[in-house]
Image (tube, rainbow, N blue to C red; front, side):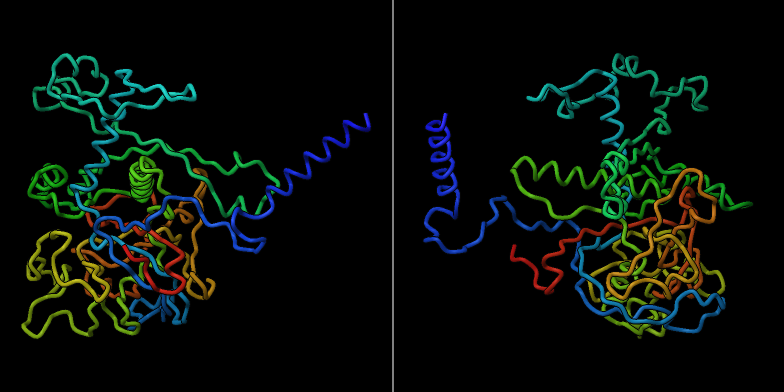
Length: 421
């Protein structure tokens, strides 16, 4: 037994000696280089917002006397941001994917994985005009006698996106609890509420835009509206998985994820480096030297069309700010991830400030207030100021609220030196 023990010890010593240091290190501490296949990505349509010091808060008189935007300086970490608001065409890519994936599930289109699980086969083409296929997917259609048009119609209210999120902050603060306790499951109806054009404007004939805005090709490059906070978050999750799935095919690492900016990130981006200016282009005027309006809002006591747009305008209209971001003032207000508290600017940290509260279904309504920024086509100039804070309830959709995403790669943000592409 003693001889056997000595042999085992000898083998252990040899294994230990072989594992100490990398081959060719000469016994020196050389570090373990990463073996990940990685090339820092730049998502299509995004621009870089650098790290820097934000002087956040009111740039002009607080005409509402809310005192909810106290002036202070904070350090911001850089990120990528969509140059434009998410358009109808971009959001339709999301709803079409949800529609197709749900159809594939009902049709039984699956691929077997090596580990014995299955995944939906999204490669198969679905011919939505095929009558036999429509019969198989009859649960997705409104019968002809109920549609109001005399023929059956696809029921967009059936489009539900399921996703799961992991609350990293709660997990970090409660390390003794199982990881499963920090996973939340979400089922979100994702199709935009097209009725907002009618419901929100009494004694106003807006049926034509309500019936055409979301799908008609002429509006492809207009900002998506009728999307609430929960739908915007669902879009961000889908976009993240879409992005990661393509990089996974090449076994490439993905550093960040798409999400809504918090309101301080939004203000930092909107200012475009002009820290004390009231508008993204500087200011204090709303017109340039030629007398042309610089944003889409409600000028001249209600002459909506004076700025070139009666309702919304294309997402890339007007000049961008110095970071290359379009319509950070006007067109549509934009959802942020931040919960609205009047005292938020006086309580946040001075490094990457944020106030975001995870909502629960039984929360009182006032805790479901989410900050919206930037003003819209229906707002007066005050709401276009980069420092103006406003809010809407998370489950509410409006004809004047849209969103855009950010994507953060923290390594290059620390020095403001972007990786060579």
